[in-house]
Image 1 (tube, rainbow, N blue to C red):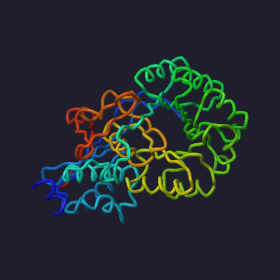
Image 2: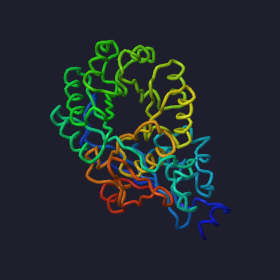
Image 3: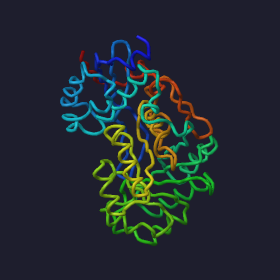
Image 4: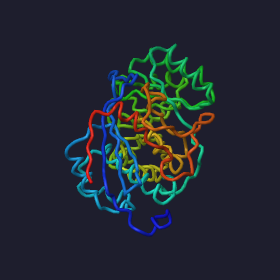
Length: 367
C-alpha cells in the first residue's frame, strides 16, 4: 500500500511490543545521584510499518492491559486513542504511546511528526545541553566544551547550597559568555524560607537568566520571587499537568513555564499547556530529560511547532546524561548548537535493536 493510500484508509494496529530496562547514568541532583535511569521502549505495528516511542517508567500490568486494548484500533486517531481508561495510566507511560502513534502515522503517510503536530515554524532548533557539575571547575570545563561546539544556551544543575551554587553559575557564565542563555535547575532544592530578595540578586549577579524549580514551596512563594531580580522564575514540577499550569497562571507565579519531556501525557496535552500559558502571555519552553534518543527526537519535533520563544531543553541520553549509548541508530543531526529536524516520515530516527537488547531486562507483546 502506498503512502497516499494510507491517508484515506484505516491504519489498524496489529501488534504492540514493550521492552524495558535500566541504563547507567552519570548525573547529580539536589536530591541525590542515581546510578541508573529506567527506560521503556514502545513499538506499535500496522503490519510491516512500525512506530516507536519511549519513556522512563517501569511497565505495570495496567499498562500492558491498556496497550493490548489498542489492537485493531485505527492509529490515525493518534492521541484520540489515549482517552477513557488511559487517563488512569501515568502520564509518562501515556506519552510513550503518543510518540509511537505519531511516528507510526507519520511513517505510513510519508509525513514528518512536526507536520502532524501542526506544521514546523522552524527546522533548526537551538538546544540547551545540561551540565551535572562535580565542582565549579568541572562545570566551567563542560560549559567551555559545549560553547566550542556552538551551543549558546546551557542548563546547569544546582544543589541548594548558595555559595557553591553561585560558584557553579559564575564558572558556566564565564565559559558561555555574556550573551548566552543560562538556566539553572535546583529540582526544588532550596527551602522557600531560605530564598530572599538578596538570594535572587546574588543569582542575577552570578550571571543566571532563569531559575527552574528553585524552591520547595507553594505558588505564593514562587510569585513572591518574581521581580526580585532579572532572573526569570520557571516552574517545572508544578506544571506537569494542565490543571497545574492553570493554577500557576491564575496565581501569577511564573515568568515562563517548562514543558518537561516524559511528563506531558501526550503531544496534545503538551500543546494545550503551551497555548494555555500563551493566553496569559507566559512563554512555555519545550524541555528535555533523560531520554535515550527516541523521546529526544520527539521533543525536537515538538519544539519546531511550539516553544519558539526559547531553546529546546537538555538532550539527555549519551549526550549530556552520561549514558553509554542511545537506543537509536543515529540521533538527529546537530549543527552549531542547533538540531536540524528532518522532513523525513515520522520521527526520522530508527531503533537500534542491538543496543536495546544490551540494556533491556524485560519484554512484553500482544498481537
